[in-house]
Length: 112
Length: 474
Image (tube, rainbow over all chains, first blue to last red; front, side, top):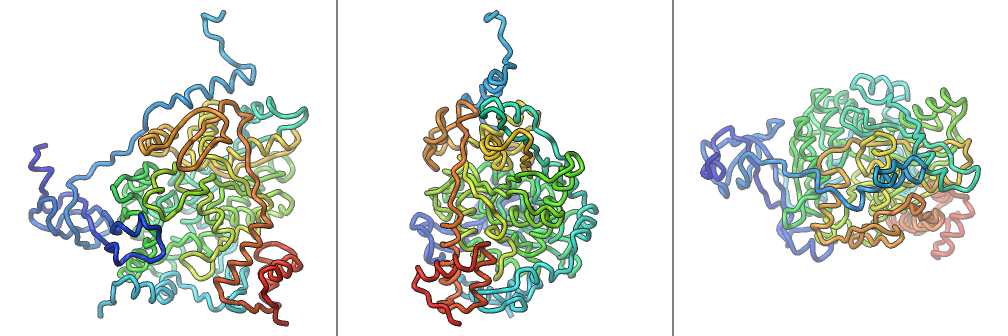
């Protein structure tokens, strides 16, 4: 995939748009200062309705349920990036310790 | 004519928008600005328990296995006093179509929306409920819009919620990923107004009636297997629906004796609307940030009268720490061969110390599990926690500090529950009820309602009002 393709999209491509829903001034009065100081934003995925667009352009999309929405083009063919994380040293021994506690601990060969 | 979309203007149209989107006229059930007829509201949609069972069968919801956790029970007994260590059973709710008990809630609400002629449903949920609504909508041929609080202002997303975006999109929903803030409600109102869709709120009667089958099934399953009802049922508690629906289901099965315990993950000290705190918690649901406020005032929600009213049903309410739940999740996989999501194991973590107090012939049922996936596993949650400056270590879970330190227990006997004083919560509930409804001079009917709604004696309500210097009109 070329760099150019990632920065631009054609009609029908899966893209993600960005919208500022409320500016800091427009936000609810009853929220902590750290939240009140930043805009209230949203990202939504759908299929591009413009013939061609680049990241940052104002665009329209058709969402998965067929609604038309508009916003700023944020990403093209957005990927799911969440993962399984790193093995956790604090958890790796839990099962073995529990089995030992139950008198079922498997002794390794060097202990025999 | 296009409606004014400004924050204040949309919020001022709140009641009209909600009335149209849930098809319920809440005024019908009101006795006073404070009191209302709860049972009449619950019965108003006209679904009996057997209707709900039939509706759920159509989309493959319910009838989940009940599994005895013999190995965890044995482990618990190894650290209990002689003769102690009740038998632990778990209801494997992960067997539902989208992987959690939330399918029960969504199934009835989505069916109801379809029956009333709505073309689609809108749901504000960052958790399993959103996935359940998307899944049920797919099966019933309705459109679904799921609104999720996902990101902080750096666009860093909680992995468990990112997984929920993926799964909702897998079911064909339009997903709005928004930043932290209570304005999610504003987005919901605007979306409902623009689409005319049904609001699949967690707090409408159908969303709670759908869970009654869970309590009913587990009581029947234990009865069939053991010839009696369970001694204790432990239920993860957040907005109150899980406790309310399950307890009502137990009662409908004829089980009025079982001790109903609510359990939440302790996140006290973290502000739920804080952009800064948002990614310093590993649990996005079943935590005290919802659990406590929803008990002290259930009507702080997106409908005028919440159908989920935990205080009516709880016998005990306990907190466990994040580290204890991760540890328990690991135990469930290693000892019982059940690799399940951590949030669904909140009640199992609480069950470990609770079972130690029960006799060996007593039965404790943990009433849920949930699916697990990338983003949900303890390893992905703890990796994310460390990336966000949280210290993760082994030790005594009493040293856990929400938002700062996650302590994974070294041994099973270190798991403990902190029991919260329900009377203190009831007093706070009374105070909130008076303040929120402006009923500073309540009448007898209000006293009766407060007593019923908090499951406390009338005398207790009078004393509480007295301590708040509130005069009762006779």
